[in-house]
Length: 533
Ligand code: MN
Image (cartoon, rainbow, N blue to C red; front, side, top):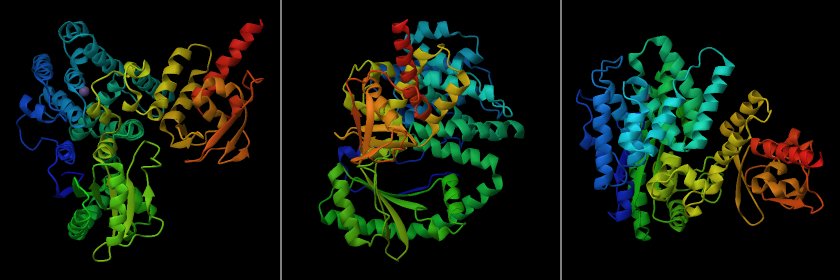
Protein backbone atom coordinates (compact mmCIF):
# COMPACT_ATOMS: atom_id res chain seq x y z
CA UNK A 1 0.00 0.00 0.00
CA UNK A 2 2.02 2.90 -1.17
CA UNK A 3 0.27 6.22 -1.20
CA UNK A 4 2.61 7.90 -3.62
CA UNK A 5 2.64 5.88 -6.75
CA UNK A 6 5.39 6.38 -9.11
CA UNK A 7 6.24 5.19 -12.53
CA UNK A 8 9.76 5.98 -13.41
CA UNK A 9 9.68 5.59 -17.14
CA UNK A 10 13.01 6.80 -18.20
CA UNK A 11 16.28 7.90 -16.86
CA UNK A 12 17.57 9.48 -20.01
CA UNK A 13 21.20 10.18 -19.26
CA UNK A 14 23.41 8.59 -16.70
CA UNK A 15 25.26 11.74 -15.78
CA UNK A 16 26.66 12.34 -12.36
CA UNK A 17 23.85 14.82 -11.72
CA UNK A 18 21.38 12.06 -12.37
CA UNK A 19 22.72 10.20 -9.38
CA UNK A 20 21.69 13.13 -7.22
CA UNK A 21 18.10 12.47 -8.03
CA UNK A 22 17.76 8.76 -8.48
CA UNK A 23 16.58 7.32 -5.24
CA UNK A 24 15.00 10.58 -4.25
CA UNK A 25 12.32 9.74 -6.74
CA UNK A 26 11.30 6.70 -4.77
CA UNK A 27 8.57 7.20 -2.20
CA UNK A 28 9.59 6.84 1.43
CA UNK A 29 9.72 3.14 2.10
CA UNK A 30 8.24 1.48 5.09
CA UNK A 31 10.34 -1.65 5.24
CA UNK A 32 7.64 -3.33 7.24
CA UNK A 33 6.83 -6.01 4.73
CA UNK A 34 8.69 -8.61 6.71
CA UNK A 35 9.44 -9.33 10.32
CA UNK A 36 13.11 -8.53 10.08
CA UNK A 37 14.14 -5.24 11.53
CA UNK A 38 16.15 -2.71 9.66
CA UNK A 39 19.83 -3.43 9.90
CA UNK A 40 22.60 -0.89 10.24
CA UNK A 41 23.68 -1.52 6.65
CA UNK A 42 20.15 -0.88 5.43
CA UNK A 43 20.10 2.35 7.39
CA UNK A 44 23.36 3.43 5.70
CA UNK A 45 21.75 3.03 2.28
CA UNK A 46 19.05 5.56 3.22
CA UNK A 47 21.47 8.49 3.31
CA UNK A 48 21.35 10.94 0.43
CA UNK A 49 25.02 11.83 0.72
CA UNK A 50 27.65 9.12 0.98
CA UNK A 51 28.93 8.75 4.53
CA UNK A 52 32.62 8.94 5.37
CA UNK A 53 34.18 6.57 7.92
CA UNK A 54 33.71 8.95 10.82
CA UNK A 55 30.04 9.52 10.02
CA UNK A 56 29.47 5.80 9.64
CA UNK A 57 31.05 5.24 13.01
CA UNK A 58 28.82 7.83 14.63
CA UNK A 59 25.66 6.30 13.18
CA UNK A 60 26.81 2.81 14.20
CA UNK A 61 27.48 3.94 17.76
CA UNK A 62 24.11 5.64 18.10
CA UNK A 63 22.47 2.54 16.62
CA UNK A 64 24.12 0.21 19.16
CA UNK A 65 23.57 2.63 22.04
CA UNK A 66 19.84 2.92 21.34
CA UNK A 67 19.55 -0.84 20.83
CA UNK A 68 20.94 -1.54 24.30
CA UNK A 69 19.00 1.28 25.92
CA UNK A 70 15.64 0.06 24.60
CA UNK A 71 16.42 -3.62 25.09
CA UNK A 72 13.32 -5.58 26.08
CA UNK A 73 10.91 -2.68 25.45
CA UNK A 74 7.96 -3.40 23.21
CA UNK A 75 5.48 -1.18 21.41
CA UNK A 76 1.72 -1.70 21.44
CA UNK A 77 2.05 -3.36 18.05
CA UNK A 78 4.36 -5.98 19.52
CA UNK A 79 7.39 -4.68 17.67
CA UNK A 80 10.59 -3.94 19.54
CA UNK A 81 10.67 -0.31 20.63
CA UNK A 82 14.07 -0.06 18.99
CA UNK A 83 12.40 -0.47 15.59
CA UNK A 84 10.59 2.85 16.12
CA UNK A 85 13.79 4.81 16.63
CA UNK A 86 15.55 3.11 13.69
CA UNK A 87 12.63 3.99 11.43
CA UNK A 88 12.74 7.57 12.70
CA UNK A 89 16.44 7.69 11.82
CA UNK A 90 15.74 6.17 8.39
CA UNK A 91 13.11 8.81 7.57
CA UNK A 92 15.59 11.54 8.51
CA UNK A 93 18.27 10.02 6.29
CA UNK A 94 15.80 9.69 3.42
CA UNK A 95 14.88 13.36 3.47
CA UNK A 96 18.54 14.34 3.35
CA UNK A 97 19.55 14.92 6.97
CA UNK A 98 23.13 14.19 7.93
CA UNK A 99 24.71 11.72 10.34
CA UNK A 100 24.43 13.83 13.48
CA UNK A 101 20.72 14.49 13.04
CA UNK A 102 20.14 10.82 12.28
CA UNK A 103 22.14 9.87 15.38
CA UNK A 104 19.95 12.20 17.45
CA UNK A 105 16.91 10.58 15.83
CA UNK A 106 18.15 7.15 16.93
CA UNK A 107 18.60 8.44 20.47
CA UNK A 108 15.46 10.57 20.64
CA UNK A 109 13.51 8.42 23.09
CA UNK A 110 16.42 7.30 25.27
CA UNK A 111 16.25 9.88 28.12
CA UNK A 112 12.46 9.76 28.28
CA UNK A 113 11.92 6.02 28.20
CA UNK A 114 15.03 4.40 29.64
CA UNK A 115 17.33 4.55 32.66
CA UNK A 116 19.99 6.28 30.63
CA UNK A 117 20.23 10.03 31.16
CA UNK A 118 20.99 12.97 28.94
CA UNK A 119 24.33 13.28 30.76
CA UNK A 120 25.25 9.79 29.57
CA UNK A 121 24.43 10.78 26.01
CA UNK A 122 26.45 13.94 26.32
CA UNK A 123 29.44 12.02 27.65
CA UNK A 124 29.31 9.59 24.77
CA UNK A 125 28.14 11.72 21.83
CA UNK A 126 29.03 15.28 22.76
CA UNK A 127 27.19 18.54 23.29
CA UNK A 128 25.54 19.01 19.88
CA UNK A 129 23.77 15.65 19.73
CA UNK A 130 22.83 15.83 23.42
CA UNK A 131 21.24 19.22 22.78
CA UNK A 132 19.17 17.88 19.90
CA UNK A 133 17.97 14.94 22.03
CA UNK A 134 17.21 17.31 24.88
CA UNK A 135 15.20 19.52 22.53
CA UNK A 136 13.00 16.60 21.49
CA UNK A 137 12.57 15.44 25.07
CA UNK A 138 11.51 18.98 26.02
CA UNK A 139 8.97 19.10 23.24
CA UNK A 140 7.60 16.22 25.23
CA UNK A 141 4.39 14.49 24.73
CA UNK A 142 1.70 16.56 23.12
CA UNK A 143 -1.66 16.64 24.78
CA UNK A 144 -4.41 18.15 22.75
CA UNK A 145 -7.49 16.91 24.52
CA UNK A 146 -10.78 18.64 23.82
CA UNK A 147 -10.54 22.32 23.07
CA UNK A 148 -8.23 23.23 25.86
CA UNK A 149 -6.77 26.34 24.34
CA UNK A 150 -4.01 26.79 26.88
CA UNK A 151 -2.70 23.31 26.22
CA UNK A 152 -2.71 23.85 22.48
CA UNK A 153 -1.00 27.21 22.80
CA UNK A 154 1.55 25.77 25.16
CA UNK A 155 2.32 23.04 22.63
CA UNK A 156 2.73 25.56 19.87
CA UNK A 157 4.93 27.71 22.06
CA UNK A 158 7.18 24.72 22.72
CA UNK A 159 7.44 23.98 19.03
CA UNK A 160 8.29 27.55 18.14
CA UNK A 161 10.88 27.83 20.85
CA UNK A 162 12.49 24.60 19.72
CA UNK A 163 12.41 25.83 16.16
CA UNK A 164 14.11 29.08 16.95
CA UNK A 165 16.73 27.18 18.92
CA UNK A 166 17.57 24.57 16.31
CA UNK A 167 15.26 23.73 13.42
CA UNK A 168 16.59 20.16 13.32
CA UNK A 169 14.73 19.39 16.56
CA UNK A 170 11.44 19.99 14.80
CA UNK A 171 12.50 17.96 11.77
CA UNK A 172 13.31 15.02 14.08
CA UNK A 173 9.93 15.47 15.75
CA UNK A 174 8.24 15.28 12.33
CA UNK A 175 10.06 12.04 11.50
CA UNK A 176 9.07 10.62 14.91
CA UNK A 177 5.45 11.58 14.30
CA UNK A 178 5.48 10.13 10.79
CA UNK A 179 6.55 6.75 12.07
CA UNK A 180 3.97 6.91 14.88
CA UNK A 181 1.31 7.65 12.27
CA UNK A 182 2.43 4.74 10.11
CA UNK A 183 1.91 2.44 13.09
CA UNK A 184 -1.22 4.10 14.49
CA UNK A 185 -3.30 1.01 13.76
CA UNK A 186 -2.00 -0.64 16.94
CA UNK A 187 -3.49 2.01 19.29
CA UNK A 188 -7.04 2.13 20.71
CA UNK A 189 -9.55 4.07 18.54
CA UNK A 190 -9.83 7.02 20.91
CA UNK A 191 -6.10 7.58 20.87
CA UNK A 192 -6.01 7.16 17.11
CA UNK A 193 -8.52 10.00 16.72
CA UNK A 194 -6.65 12.34 19.05
CA UNK A 195 -3.28 11.73 17.44
CA UNK A 196 -4.65 11.91 13.88
CA UNK A 197 -6.40 15.22 14.64
CA UNK A 198 -3.29 16.70 16.18
CA UNK A 199 -1.23 15.54 13.21
CA UNK A 200 -3.63 17.15 10.74
CA UNK A 201 -3.87 20.39 12.71
CA UNK A 202 -0.31 20.92 13.86
CA UNK A 203 2.28 18.62 12.34
CA UNK A 204 1.18 18.53 8.70
CA UNK A 205 1.04 22.38 8.56
CA UNK A 206 4.49 22.57 10.12
CA UNK A 207 5.87 20.12 7.53
CA UNK A 208 4.21 22.25 4.87
CA UNK A 209 5.66 25.46 6.23
CA UNK A 210 9.10 23.88 6.21
CA UNK A 211 8.43 22.84 2.61
CA UNK A 212 8.84 19.10 3.30
CA UNK A 213 6.13 18.08 0.84
CA UNK A 214 6.95 14.41 1.08
CA UNK A 215 6.29 14.27 4.83
CA UNK A 216 3.36 16.68 4.67
CA UNK A 217 1.62 14.51 2.07
CA UNK A 218 2.03 11.29 3.98
CA UNK A 219 1.03 12.84 7.33
CA UNK A 220 -2.14 14.22 5.75
CA UNK A 221 -3.02 10.93 4.07
CA UNK A 222 -2.52 8.90 7.24
CA UNK A 223 -4.55 11.37 9.36
CA UNK A 224 -7.27 11.49 6.72
CA UNK A 225 -7.53 7.71 6.78
CA UNK A 226 -8.30 7.71 10.52
CA UNK A 227 -10.38 10.88 10.69
CA UNK A 228 -12.62 10.27 7.66
CA UNK A 229 -12.33 6.58 6.79
CA UNK A 230 -15.27 6.60 4.37
CA UNK A 231 -14.05 9.58 2.37
CA UNK A 232 -10.56 8.16 2.40
CA UNK A 233 -11.76 4.88 0.95
CA UNK A 234 -13.82 6.58 -1.77
CA UNK A 235 -11.02 8.94 -2.76
CA UNK A 236 -8.45 6.15 -2.74
CA UNK A 237 -10.57 3.96 -5.01
CA UNK A 238 -11.16 6.75 -7.53
CA UNK A 239 -7.52 7.72 -7.44
CA UNK A 240 -6.34 4.14 -8.04
CA UNK A 241 -8.76 3.69 -10.92
CA UNK A 242 -7.80 7.00 -12.54
CA UNK A 243 -4.14 6.31 -12.05
CA UNK A 244 -4.43 2.99 -13.88
CA UNK A 245 -6.42 4.59 -16.70
CA UNK A 246 -4.15 7.56 -17.19
CA UNK A 247 -0.93 5.66 -16.71
CA UNK A 248 -0.92 4.45 -20.30
CA UNK A 249 -1.58 7.92 -21.69
CA UNK A 250 1.10 9.38 -19.54
CA UNK A 251 3.53 6.66 -20.58
CA UNK A 252 2.98 7.51 -24.25
CA UNK A 253 3.35 11.23 -23.56
CA UNK A 254 6.59 10.61 -21.70
CA UNK A 255 8.07 8.61 -24.58
CA UNK A 256 7.15 11.32 -27.09
CA UNK A 257 8.49 14.09 -24.88
CA UNK A 258 11.75 12.25 -24.38
CA UNK A 259 12.24 11.94 -28.12
CA UNK A 260 11.30 15.53 -28.79
CA UNK A 261 13.48 16.99 -26.05
CA UNK A 262 16.35 14.74 -27.10
CA UNK A 263 16.19 15.93 -30.68
CA UNK A 264 16.57 19.50 -29.41
CA UNK A 265 19.63 18.41 -27.47
CA UNK A 266 18.15 19.09 -24.10
CA UNK A 267 19.73 16.90 -21.52
CA UNK A 268 16.86 15.27 -19.71
CA UNK A 269 17.88 13.85 -16.36
CA UNK A 270 14.60 12.18 -15.59
CA UNK A 271 11.02 12.03 -16.74
CA UNK A 272 8.47 10.40 -14.52
CA UNK A 273 4.80 10.40 -13.72
CA UNK A 274 3.46 10.61 -10.23
CA UNK A 275 0.05 10.20 -8.64
CA UNK A 276 -1.34 12.78 -6.27
CA UNK A 277 -1.61 12.16 -2.55
CA UNK A 278 -5.06 10.92 -1.50
CA UNK A 279 -6.03 13.79 0.79
CA UNK A 280 -5.04 16.53 -1.68
CA UNK A 281 -6.83 14.60 -4.43
CA UNK A 282 -9.98 14.45 -2.28
CA UNK A 283 -9.90 18.22 -1.63
CA UNK A 284 -9.61 18.86 -5.37
CA UNK A 285 -12.40 16.44 -6.17
CA UNK A 286 -14.64 18.21 -3.67
CA UNK A 287 -13.76 21.56 -5.18
CA UNK A 288 -14.88 20.26 -8.60
CA UNK A 289 -18.08 18.66 -7.27
CA UNK A 290 -16.55 15.18 -7.44
CA UNK A 291 -16.04 15.48 -11.20
CA UNK A 292 -12.78 13.63 -11.67
CA UNK A 293 -12.37 14.81 -15.27
CA UNK A 294 -11.69 18.28 -13.90
CA UNK A 295 -8.75 17.09 -11.84
CA UNK A 296 -5.92 17.40 -14.34
CA UNK A 297 -3.03 16.42 -12.13
CA UNK A 298 -4.09 12.95 -10.96
CA UNK A 299 -0.84 11.94 -12.57
CA UNK A 300 1.63 14.71 -13.23
CA UNK A 301 4.55 14.31 -15.58
CA UNK A 302 7.79 15.66 -14.21
CA UNK A 303 10.67 16.63 -16.44
CA UNK A 304 13.95 17.21 -14.68
CA UNK A 305 16.64 19.13 -16.53
CA UNK A 306 20.04 20.42 -15.36
CA UNK A 307 19.69 24.22 -15.29
CA UNK A 308 17.04 26.94 -15.09
CA UNK A 309 17.37 28.02 -18.77
CA UNK A 310 16.78 24.38 -19.76
CA UNK A 311 13.44 24.52 -17.93
CA UNK A 312 12.17 27.34 -20.13
CA UNK A 313 13.53 25.76 -23.28
CA UNK A 314 11.87 22.46 -22.37
CA UNK A 315 8.57 24.27 -21.76
CA UNK A 316 8.68 25.71 -25.28
CA UNK A 317 9.36 22.28 -26.75
CA UNK A 318 6.54 20.69 -24.75
CA UNK A 319 4.18 23.29 -26.21
CA UNK A 320 5.22 22.60 -29.79
CA UNK A 321 4.40 18.95 -29.17
CA UNK A 322 1.23 19.27 -27.11
CA UNK A 323 -1.21 22.18 -27.21
CA UNK A 324 -1.40 23.97 -23.83
CA UNK A 325 -4.64 24.92 -22.09
CA UNK A 326 -5.14 28.65 -21.92
CA UNK A 327 -4.30 30.22 -18.57
CA UNK A 328 -2.72 27.10 -17.10
CA UNK A 329 0.96 27.97 -17.59
CA UNK A 330 2.48 28.82 -14.23
CA UNK A 331 5.96 30.11 -13.71
CA UNK A 332 6.83 29.31 -10.11
CA UNK A 333 10.51 29.78 -10.91
CA UNK A 334 10.42 33.54 -11.29
CA UNK A 335 7.60 33.80 -8.76
CA UNK A 336 7.94 30.93 -6.25
CA UNK A 337 5.00 29.70 -4.20
CA UNK A 338 4.79 31.10 -0.70
CA UNK A 339 6.46 28.04 0.83
CA UNK A 340 9.37 28.39 -1.58
CA UNK A 341 8.20 25.85 -4.19
CA UNK A 342 9.75 26.39 -7.62
CA UNK A 343 8.84 24.72 -10.93
CA UNK A 344 7.25 25.46 -14.30
CA UNK A 345 3.74 24.04 -14.65
CA UNK A 346 1.69 23.66 -17.77
CA UNK A 347 -1.42 21.69 -18.62
CA UNK A 348 -1.63 20.25 -22.12
CA UNK A 349 -3.82 18.09 -24.34
CA UNK A 350 -1.92 14.80 -24.30
CA UNK A 351 -1.53 12.19 -27.06
CA UNK A 352 -5.11 10.91 -26.95
CA UNK A 353 -6.53 14.34 -26.25
CA UNK A 354 -6.68 13.77 -22.51
CA UNK A 355 -5.45 16.55 -20.31
CA UNK A 356 -2.09 16.10 -18.58
CA UNK A 357 -0.22 18.35 -16.18
CA UNK A 358 3.49 18.74 -16.81
CA UNK A 359 6.00 20.05 -14.27
CA UNK A 360 9.50 21.10 -15.28
CA UNK A 361 12.29 21.69 -12.78
CA UNK A 362 15.98 21.27 -11.93
CA UNK A 363 17.23 18.55 -9.53
CA UNK A 364 17.70 21.14 -6.84
CA UNK A 365 14.15 22.43 -7.19
CA UNK A 366 12.99 18.84 -7.11
CA UNK A 367 14.76 18.10 -3.86
CA UNK A 368 13.50 21.32 -2.36
CA UNK A 369 9.95 20.50 -3.36
CA UNK A 370 10.11 17.08 -1.73
CA UNK A 371 12.26 17.83 1.26
CA UNK A 372 12.03 21.60 1.71
CA UNK A 373 14.22 22.97 4.42
CA UNK A 374 15.81 19.54 4.82
CA UNK A 375 17.14 19.81 1.25
CA UNK A 376 19.56 22.44 2.48
CA UNK A 377 21.43 19.74 4.30
CA UNK A 378 21.81 17.85 1.06
CA UNK A 379 23.57 20.81 -0.50
CA UNK A 380 25.52 22.31 2.36
CA UNK A 381 27.75 20.90 5.03
CA UNK A 382 25.97 20.43 8.33
CA UNK A 383 25.52 23.70 10.11
CA UNK A 384 23.37 24.73 12.96
CA UNK A 385 20.74 27.38 12.65
CA UNK A 386 22.80 29.48 15.00
CA UNK A 387 25.50 29.55 12.33
CA UNK A 388 22.95 30.89 9.94
CA UNK A 389 22.07 33.77 12.19
CA UNK A 390 25.68 34.53 12.93
CA UNK A 391 26.32 34.48 9.17
CA UNK A 392 29.17 32.06 9.48
CA UNK A 393 28.76 31.01 5.89
CA UNK A 394 27.80 32.25 2.50
CA UNK A 395 24.28 33.69 2.45
CA UNK A 396 23.58 31.98 -0.87
CA UNK A 397 23.33 28.65 0.87
CA UNK A 398 20.02 29.42 2.54
CA UNK A 399 17.91 32.15 0.96
CA UNK A 400 17.06 34.60 3.68
CA UNK A 401 13.48 35.22 2.68
CA UNK A 402 12.62 31.64 3.48
CA UNK A 403 13.76 32.11 6.99
CA UNK A 404 12.36 35.47 7.88
CA UNK A 405 9.82 33.87 10.14
CA UNK A 406 12.54 32.01 11.99
CA UNK A 407 14.19 35.34 12.60
CA UNK A 408 10.89 36.70 13.87
CA UNK A 409 10.64 33.88 16.37
CA UNK A 410 14.11 34.54 17.57
CA UNK A 411 13.38 38.21 18.09
CA UNK A 412 10.35 37.19 20.03
CA UNK A 413 12.37 35.02 22.38
CA UNK A 414 14.39 38.02 23.46
CA UNK A 415 11.21 40.09 23.71
CA UNK A 416 9.13 37.81 25.91
CA UNK A 417 8.48 38.65 29.49
CA UNK A 418 8.09 42.33 28.67
CA UNK A 419 4.43 42.60 29.48
CA UNK A 420 2.78 41.40 26.27
CA UNK A 421 -0.33 39.35 26.73
CA UNK A 422 1.03 35.91 26.02
CA UNK A 423 -2.12 34.52 24.51
CA UNK A 424 -2.47 37.39 22.05
CA UNK A 425 1.10 36.99 21.19
CA UNK A 426 0.88 33.29 20.53
CA UNK A 427 -2.15 33.86 18.38
CA UNK A 428 -0.24 36.23 16.20
CA UNK A 429 2.73 33.91 16.01
CA UNK A 430 0.30 31.28 14.83
CA UNK A 431 -0.89 33.66 12.12
CA UNK A 432 2.66 34.40 11.02
CA UNK A 433 3.50 30.77 10.90
CA UNK A 434 0.51 28.97 9.49
CA UNK A 435 -1.05 31.59 7.29
CA UNK A 436 -0.42 31.69 3.63
CA UNK A 437 2.51 33.77 2.71
CA UNK A 438 3.12 36.14 -0.15
CA UNK A 439 6.23 37.42 -1.81
CA UNK A 440 6.67 41.12 -2.45
CA UNK A 441 9.62 42.82 -4.08
CA UNK A 442 11.73 45.84 -3.23
CA UNK A 443 12.35 48.19 -6.19
CA UNK A 444 15.77 46.56 -6.46
CA UNK A 445 14.16 43.14 -6.85
CA UNK A 446 14.90 41.68 -3.41
CA UNK A 447 12.18 39.31 -2.26
CA UNK A 448 10.37 39.95 1.01
CA UNK A 449 8.28 37.12 2.43
CA UNK A 450 5.16 38.25 4.33
CA UNK A 451 1.95 36.70 5.63
CA UNK A 452 -1.22 37.33 3.63
CA UNK A 453 -2.81 40.66 4.54
CA UNK A 454 0.52 42.31 5.35
CA UNK A 455 0.74 46.09 4.93
CA UNK A 456 3.49 48.44 3.71
CA UNK A 457 4.45 48.96 7.36
CA UNK A 458 5.09 45.22 7.73
CA UNK A 459 7.09 45.41 4.53
CA UNK A 460 9.28 48.28 5.70
CA UNK A 461 9.97 46.61 9.05
CA UNK A 462 10.84 43.42 7.23
CA UNK A 463 13.41 45.37 5.20
CA UNK A 464 14.90 47.14 8.22
CA UNK A 465 13.46 48.40 11.49
CA UNK A 466 15.11 51.82 11.00
CA UNK A 467 13.34 52.17 7.68
CA UNK A 468 10.17 51.01 9.40
CA UNK A 469 10.24 53.86 11.89
CA UNK A 470 10.89 56.45 9.18
CA UNK A 471 8.04 55.38 6.94
CA UNK A 472 5.80 58.21 5.71
CA UNK A 473 4.19 56.61 2.66
CA UNK A 474 4.31 53.76 0.20
CA UNK A 475 3.99 53.05 -3.51
CA UNK A 476 2.78 49.71 -4.77
CA UNK A 477 3.54 48.97 -8.42
CA UNK A 478 4.27 52.67 -8.84
CA UNK A 479 1.04 53.98 -7.30
CA UNK A 480 0.66 55.67 -3.93
CA UNK A 481 -1.28 53.56 -1.42
CA UNK A 482 -2.48 54.00 2.17
CA UNK A 483 -0.31 52.52 4.90
CA UNK A 484 -2.98 49.94 5.74
CA UNK A 485 -3.07 48.70 2.12
CA UNK A 486 -2.99 44.92 1.84
CA UNK A 487 -0.06 43.83 -0.33
CA UNK A 488 -0.64 41.10 -2.94
CA UNK A 489 1.70 38.40 -4.09
CA UNK A 490 4.27 39.62 -6.60
CA UNK A 491 3.82 43.36 -6.08
CA UNK A 492 6.71 45.80 -6.01
CA UNK A 493 6.64 47.92 -2.87
CA UNK A 494 8.55 51.15 -2.53
CA UNK A 495 8.71 52.70 0.93
CA UNK A 496 8.91 56.50 1.20
CA UNK A 497 10.84 57.65 4.24
CA UNK A 498 11.63 60.94 5.91
CA UNK A 499 14.71 61.82 7.90
CA UNK A 500 12.65 63.94 10.29
CA UNK A 501 10.51 60.97 11.16
CA UNK A 502 12.26 59.01 13.87
CA UNK A 503 9.51 57.20 15.72
CA UNK A 504 6.73 54.90 14.60
CA UNK A 505 3.12 55.92 14.94
CA UNK A 506 1.24 54.31 17.84
CA UNK A 507 -1.69 53.60 15.51
CA UNK A 508 0.44 51.31 13.35
CA UNK A 509 0.09 48.66 16.04
CA UNK A 510 -3.49 48.23 14.89
CA UNK A 511 -2.73 47.84 11.19
CA UNK A 512 0.38 45.67 11.11
CA UNK A 513 0.03 41.96 10.52
CA UNK A 514 3.40 40.54 11.48
CA UNK A 515 4.54 39.88 15.00
CA UNK A 516 7.94 41.16 14.02
CA UNK A 517 6.71 44.64 13.08
CA UNK A 518 4.48 44.77 16.13
CA UNK A 519 7.23 43.91 18.57
CA UNK A 520 9.66 46.30 16.89
CA UNK A 521 7.19 49.19 17.02
CA UNK A 522 6.50 48.53 20.71
CA UNK A 523 10.20 48.33 21.43
CA UNK A 524 10.93 51.63 19.65
CA UNK A 525 8.08 53.41 21.42
CA UNK A 526 9.20 52.06 24.80
CA UNK A 527 12.75 53.17 24.22
CA UNK A 528 11.61 56.68 23.30
CA UNK A 529 9.49 56.83 26.46
CA UNK A 530 12.42 55.81 28.60
CA UNK A 531 14.69 58.36 26.98
CA UNK A 532 12.16 61.10 27.68
CA UNK A 533 11.75 60.26 31.35
MN1 MN B 1 9.45 8.58 19.46
